[in-house]
Length: 331
Picture (tube, rainbow, N blue to C red):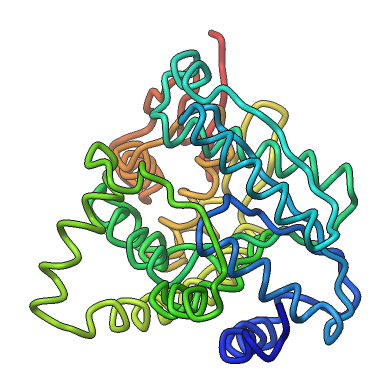
């Protein structure tokens, strides 16, 4: 496949890469390829750009063990594709159903955890610089709606990050319609995951039931939502810098917990207070909820009547002098 045949998609891909500084010259990029149209297009696009960006490429595939022979068919397809492009191929078989039962997770979450654990191992093994994921603009729209329906912090409405650590999403600003059109025009084959039609998954119900209704109200709904998400992400980045400053000023990390200087903390805006406490709770060994966050804010309130609260898994929050403690205790 030549750069010429994929010229439009490659230009869009390169524009996104340069705009967000996703890839530097000479990097080793692993590409997660499921066999579906998005990841196949991503691999071909990066392959077309390999000389311009002096890239080294590798292909990774995680077979979840969910769809039996169909899943094995997809794995064989991806391996053949990697071989045809003369690229190194890394694959692992998983048991997502068993893992989901063991950890009491949804099948979707279990598969995700196993997949990313595999990605981390391959990144370490190969010492690659980045791992590229095939999420598209449509995936971003569906993810934002999923978070909205399930209830999420305001920051979650920014959707998936285009880069997070070693993970990059070069297709995140390109819609699936354009990808499918290019693949069909060029006769590029890909696999179809039949589970994308199953209504048992919330994401599929969003895609096939909710989105068509929303698009009737506003044909530009997807683009409008992405524009809003981009603004949310920019504002969130600014807020996070302020939270970083507040953490440096107020927080002391202890052997069995965290404490905050309330004299400094109380002077901050509520937005910063809430965001910092949410970050600190995320560092604990229990799954914090919005209720825990609200209770800690009440404990931290100057002169407030609440002095101590019980938290899950042996943790507690309490006020002592000018300090707010989030502490683990077996007593």
